Length: 75
Image (cartoon, rainbow, N blue to C red; front, side):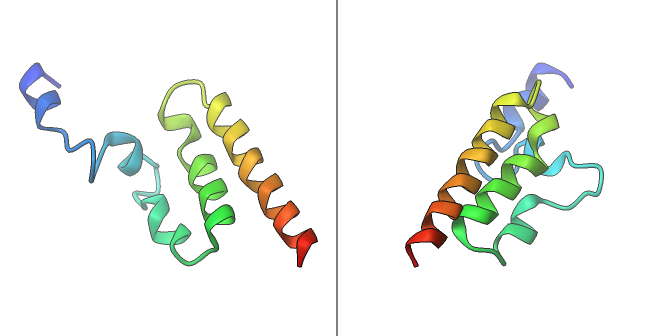
């Protein structure tokens, strides 16, 4: 990809880590059918290997899962 193509990438609506999963499916297609915390956790898991090492994304997924567990304890 040359410099001009990099400038043309839509970082708001379609950055590479949104569309780079081998399945071709975007995380939002699945996550929008889940609650916020679980959808967010899945989003971070889904894209963790598309933006570098992935460790930070996996930690964020755990954060959302823990938040969902706490939310369910309150009910």
